[in-house]
Length: 252
Image (cartoon, rainbow, N blue to C red; front, top):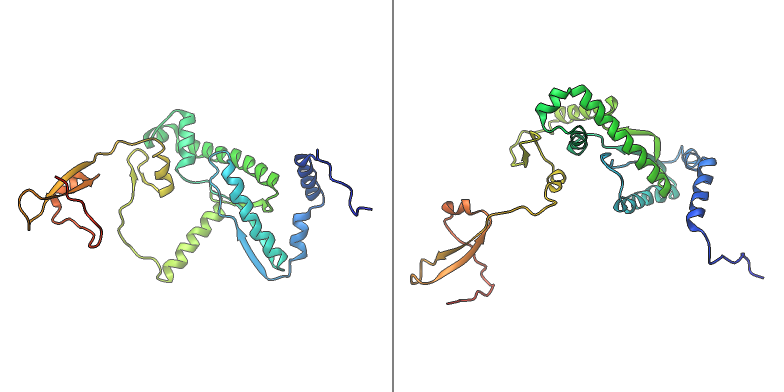
């Protein structure tokens, strides 16, 4: 006699997932696992917060599945794993979406509309997306404390950032420096690499030229051919680099 009942070839896996999720919720399984390990050595997992400015996509499923593995593994190793959900609610993506919804553009129009009213709409927008992110995450079985998340617009979170900066300053770990950074004249702010990449979704025309450089130690008919996308730097060029061991072709 077989030890287990045969598995139907018509098993409804999607329905089984929902049934298991409902069992976890009904029995408070996630909360109980935290209680079981309350006195164990701590392992703190504060999720690197997704930006709540749009609906989650398929690629977020993969990253959240990987994140979930770490918490479960550490808990099975005997740790008390504090798993806190987080939401990034600041930044240009949120503001730009609200601007599009209001059909306004730029700092002056935001100020004319009212900064307080604009901020309230930004907060409303991210909260709507947070609800959908939570629904997707729970459907995946991602175990996080969604009832007590940290949100970057909360006063307590903002004060903790100021406290961190104060500690770094008093420990003499802050310095003043200079760095070239991308800047958006419309938004009147510097841009992160992620924000910058969002503006390059379409092909952008870019000037480029081929230039001949005459060799000083040869006759006037021998040149090196180079290509550059920054032709405005050519007047300042004083030398051309070549590889010492790479082959070059001489063409007439």
